[in-house]
Length: 317
Image 1: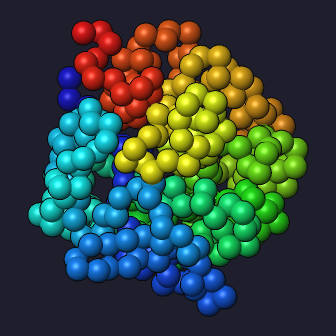
Image 2 (image 1 turned 120 degrees about the vertical axis):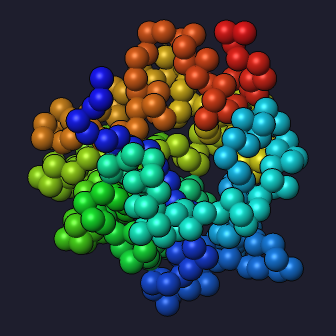
């Protein structure tokens, strides 16, 4: 049967440009925001004066389609960077009009677009809420320039909000709402020792509730390696290339007991503010069907990669 509508893609991505965090940064934080240093054709990311290792730079080169599976089967990611090439970085990955052309070719009516790098940036600067707010705001203003929050009513790019300082979070939320944001993104993890559902954050959720804006959570560096990794024999602050089993696995497709406990707290704003709309990427957070563990372990072989260690053959095999 031919459908009367085209696909709506709820989990699409773009690649940031090198100035995504510097174009609009407050001058007071110009030396502490995410900076890109290029030497001999290779990029190095610096965040608050420290090397950023969790995610590989992808500004004008990327890996070709189909190479991710081989990467997920290589715990050391030895050959991953070697697959990057300029030919794989299609113009549609960094240009919204070219993306619309690609969406037309693929039969996609509309797409929710999320960052590739920016979803991991809050964690290394969480010690300074004012810095975090400045970096997120600079990124969101870049996003407004390059992608827009509802470009042609087909591309819905998602601004990032940090809850580290409730007042600053409310200010940035209000600003992006006035700029036309249709969704917002929050880090998928605790905030300075609190659940995001803690009453401490009620002023923020009250604005979300009144605006009826969906909230998106996407997999990234949410700090689960630090919270749980050391106790399981993993590095608490790993480079993504070496050890991300806990940080990727728990928020993505963690054990049912963890997910059950987490949902109880995560969904509290839905009870306190009944107009709140759920826009979570459930397939990324493990908030889908909880009772059946085997299918989740089967899925764990895929995008999240190292869920229960590095899964080589699929569990079903």
